[in-house]
Image (cartoon, rainbow, N blue to C red; front, side, top):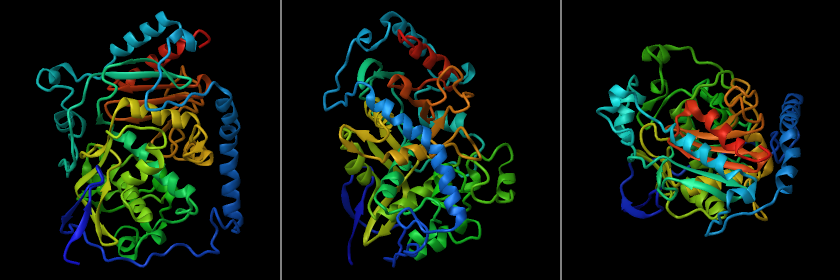
Length: 446
C-alpha cells in the first residue's frame, strides 16, 4: 500500500501520512468460547464467588435505580430548558449565596507564584507548580489556557443556575478517564469484552500483547485492574515510563520499587490509564472518539465542539490505517476538551444509570459496577468515579453521592437523592464539600 489513511482521533479527519508506530495486521485472539465469561457463565467456584460478591455490592445501586426513574424526568434536547430555582425546590436567595460562595473558592496559585504566572495559563502552571518533580515531563499533546470560573446547577434535568462561559471548550483533564471507562463499558455491553476478570493480553493482536502485556506481572493484568487503577502495569508508553508519573520526592525509588501483584495496590497513574486506552483501541479497531461520539455523545445530544486528543507520538497502524490512541488526561497534554454544558449531559446520563429517555446508552449493570468500591481504595470505583461511601471526602453529602474529577479542579457531582447534578470548573478541590453543601442546602427540603 503506497499510502495509508491517517485518522485523527480528535476530529475524525483523514489525511495521507506515513506510519509512526507500525504494527502488522494481526490475527486476533480472544479467550476460548468455553472459558468463564459474561456470555458463557460456566466456571470455577472462585469465579462464581467473585460474581456473588460483585452482585451483593451492586444490589443497593440497582434497587435505587427505581427511585431515580420515579423522579420528574426531563432530558434536554438541542435547546436545554431552564427553570426558576423556586420551581425546582430551591430557595432562590440561598442558591445565589451558595453560588457566590463557590466563586470565592476559585482555584488560585500561591501568592508568590501568582505574581509571575497566570492561573489560567495551564501549560505554565503545569511546568512550574503541578508536576515539578517528574522525569520525562515533556508536553507531547495539545494544551490550552483555561476560561473563567464556570458552573451549572441542574435539578430534575433543568438548568436552575449557571455562570461563567458554559459553552467554552476547555481541558477537562482526568474527567477524560470517565469517558475512557465509558468506552470500556460500551465494549462490555456489546460483548467485545466478555468478562472484566479476563486478562487483557488475549484480546490484543500478538505483537501488541507481546510488547505491552507479556511480562510476568503484566500478563496477569485484567480489565478490572486497569479500570480501577490497580494494575501496576510496568513499561514505557509514548515515551513515558510508568514509574515517572508522580514518583514522589525520589523518582528512582519508584523505578526500583518491587512490583505489587495486580489488584493489590491502587496508584493513580496516567501511563497505565493510557495503556487501557491503547488496549481499547485494539478491541474496537476504530478511534475511540468516534466510538464515543456515535454510541454516547450523539444520543445524549452533546454538542459537536468537544475533542478528545492523544499525543503527537501516540499513533498506531491498525487494519491498514493510522489511528491515534487517546490520552486519559491532560498530564502531558491531550485528553478531553469539552464544555460545561456537555459535562452536564454526562452527569445526567450517570444520574439516570446510563439511560437517556427511552434508550439505555450504558447498561445499568455497568454503571453499578463503576460505582462499586475498589478493594485497595474504597473511595474509588472505575476511573474516574470518586465515591463518598465512607463520607470522608464529602462529609456533609450523602454516602451514595459521587463525582467525576479532573485537575483544575473540574468536577461533575451526582446526587441521586435530590435528582441533582452540579458542574464546577476551576474550583479549589479543598473547598468542594463546603460549596456542594451550600448548594444542596439551598433546597427547601435539602
